[in-house]
Image 1: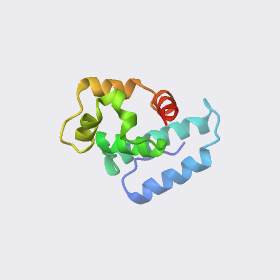
Image 2: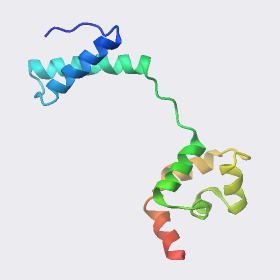
Image 3: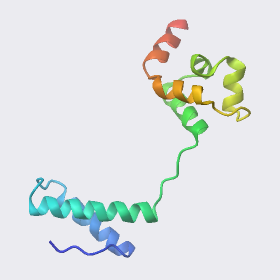
Amino acid sequence: MNVKPIRTEDDYQAALAAIDRLMHAQPDTPEGDHLDVLATLVEAWEEKHYPIEEPDPIEAIRHRMEALGLDRKALEPLIGGRSRVSEVLNRKRPLSLTMIRRLSETPVSYTHLDVYKRQI
């Protein structure tokens, strides 16, 4: 196994190509070990050079609503009344810990979507 640090974009691209070639390597084999080491190096390079920012909570909520075809009314059981939902989505009121818990603990894609569709 010939492994070297990733220091440049060319090194990074070469490591990605090697990972592509080794993708079907069996675990606990020399090829599988090589794949593990390369994947670890690439992950470290990407974290440093291509960081992923934390998503904005309101944008995440809007994206989820759009993906599920929901409108603001579907958020009322989780956030509060119509005006509260409006305030949160328009950034006039911050999400409270209770709202965050309700949003994270409720499988919106199943429970509220079904309830909401039945109300229509």
